[in-house]
Amino acid sequence: MEQGKIGVVTVTYNSEPVLQEFFDSLAGQTHRSFVLYVVDNASKDNTLEISRQRTDLPVVIIANAENLGVAEGNNQGIRAALADGCECVLLLNNDIVSPADLFAQLYAGLDRHHCDMTTGKMYYHDRPDVFWCAGGHFQPWLGYRTQHDGEYQKDVGQFDQPRRVTYTPTCCLLVQRSVFDRIGLMDSRYFVYSDDVDFLYRCLKQGLLLWYVPEAKLWHKVSALTGNMSDFTVHYSTRNRAYFISKHLRWSMRFSLTVLYRLYHEIRFLLHIDQHSRHSLRKKSWETGRKMSRSNQ
Image (cartoon, rainbow, N blue to C red):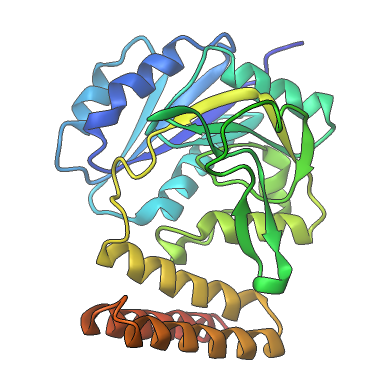
């Protein structure tokens, strides 16, 4: 099939440790009709220098003077790709490695499944036969929390069939340009975390189709750059969860989930899972998220 032009958008922030493998993966892609948009959020390391040195790739660099966050960084890349006439936009983390047919398999899946978006098999980089995500889904009964299908499972062929899914992290998501015409861009207020949840929730509500394409594979260096459950992570994940609930869900669900989350935070504190500082951070972040939604109205 004819190779449509893909705008590959990746957001960098002090990404030097992972860039060479990422760029090498892109340089080997068999689908050659693509432009890479590197959106840098004021990295302090050699991210920009390394990106500029890759003259073997069709790279457009957008260098921000400050850290605008992942959501707005993606938006900058999406706008540039659409303005350049790209048929599709691939949102892609740079802490991944992939085989040469990743782009080709994702692109072929759009036509094969008559869908609006595609994603693929994502494995842990340090456990290359163990799934990080094989598609995913929303859990409406839990306030549309998301679940990675297959997470921590060894690949023994249980996710070898393509299927419609409702969620996937934007670590790897190929999106037809018509989707942005329908629902708009990412909500930049999330800054980091849950921006993908918000985007795909809006897609779901508009009836847009996302398919999991098992032939498209990548290996993700999970937490290679952002760390794991730092105060930064706790703040934004808690704040953004509250923001999503307050922004999208009906009053009765908002009330129930707020009560449950407050109870959850108190139990963690009483069981000494969270120290006082972490407990206070969770409570403050939750209230900040609720206020963000009210300021949108």
